[in-house]
Length: 166
Image (tube, rainbow, N blue to C red; front, side, top):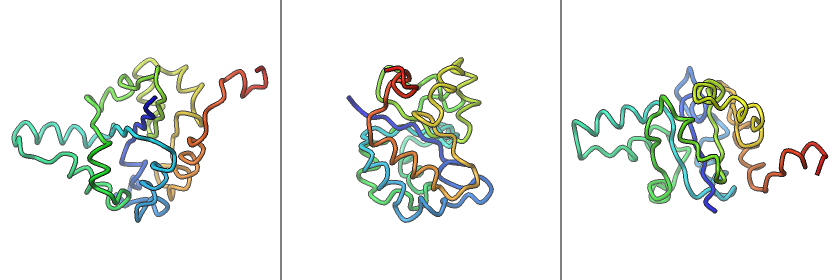
């Protein structure tokens, strides 16, 4: 089964106020953690996706994945791999509606609560926060992202097993 990672950019990969890569994710460290965790499908849910869609309607030659790769400012370093495994969410305003909950999905977004609530997925958010859903510190150094990605390397216990019921 494919392992899918839905990811935001501002506040998740880049510091919200600085617009710079979080220090623990810089110099390819984000890519390394993603690859070590076995993700083979990356879906960008960031608002920048809307910019890509608008510019693409005016300029069919616009390289949206290239622009996204550049926006991530070195947190990914293998551009060929990035292009091969990354796609854009259809509608970033309704990003949580596109989570494929019947697959091996993972979601990191500093606004995950807001978008999952908007999609009617509040119960899923409450159940999966800290497990399949990461709400990183929007101004942190990215250590929370790396730690969460490392925890994603291992199969999740069911909710009942985690509670000691299994």
